[in-house]
Each structure stands twice: as structure tokens, then as C-alpha cells.
Length: 190
Image 1: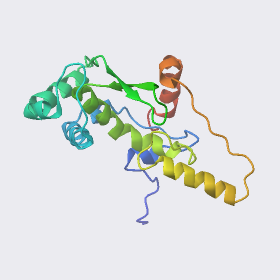
Image 2: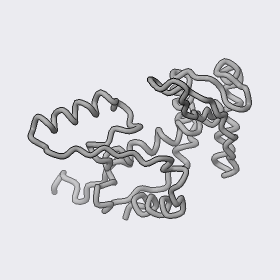
Image 3: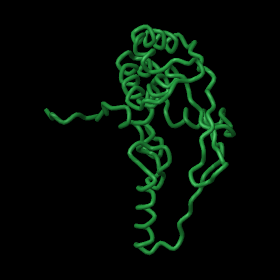
Image 4: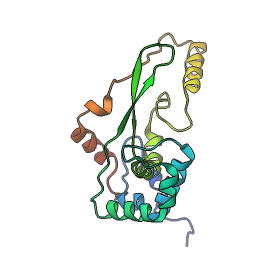
């Protein structure tokens, strides 16, 4: 009798995913609102510091009501009644461009905990399928890393390097189509 399993079954969700989308994962929402994940998300939001959103609540005030806040978020996500709050808009001066500003959206602490809880569960699934040359908004990747990549490409003889940025991508993308593509990538294992 063989001790080697006949059918290998991955234990981690990210192991189900391949660049071709051949394998799928189960629903993640129950893992998003799991209390331990919400606690980890809070710790990450707290470590990032930052100011509060439109509700005026700061990190210290949120921490003072932590159990109630996380219980409420758990319940709202589980019951599918969670509603994000409006985002506070702050004008930030553009570096090296006097008189020019960019708008920065500041979510409430509550919403940032929810966003981080989602990121905690989704990042391990999507990170393996992102192109290695993409550096925007990815943990552990910086502008300096992107510049090193460009320099290495030049040194290796590449003649073309293309940089692109889609203005207001998430504000203008067809969300129904995007969600349909995500659903194709991440559904259920066989």
C-alpha cells in the first residue's frame, strides 16, 4: 500500500489558483468577517496610523470601543448589511509642483478595518497571478524597486520600456464586468 496520496489536495487557498485559472477557491466572505481576521486587520490599520474619516473618529477612540466595533463589523458583514461611509476628501500639495494639488480620500477607521480584512484574504489569492513588472499598490514593492527593474532591463539590452497609468481606473471601470472576471478566476474547487 502506498503512503503517497493518490490525489493531492492543496491546503491553502492560494494553492488552488493558477495563472490559467484552472483551479478555483470557495467563497471567502466567511473568512473575511472571521473575528481573528478582523483583529489582525485592526492591528494593521492601527500600525499605519493616519487620521479619521467623515465620522471624526480617530484611532484612539476606535481602540477604546474595539470589541464593540469589531463585533458590529463582524455582524454587518455576516448579515450582508455593511455599508461603507462617505470618504473625507483632503487636498494634498503635489511634490515639486507649487499650486497643484491631488485629492486624497480618507475612509473612516471602521471602513479601513473592513478594507484591510478584505485585503488580508484577497491579496494571497491575487498576488501570485500579478505580472512581476507591476509595482503599483503592491505590498513590499516601491518606486525604487520599479526603477531597479527598469535599470536591469536597460542593462540586459531591452530597447523598449513602457510606463502606463490609467487615470481613475476604479472610478471609470465597468464594475459588473470586473466582478464577472473576478468570479471566473475565483469560484469553487472541483
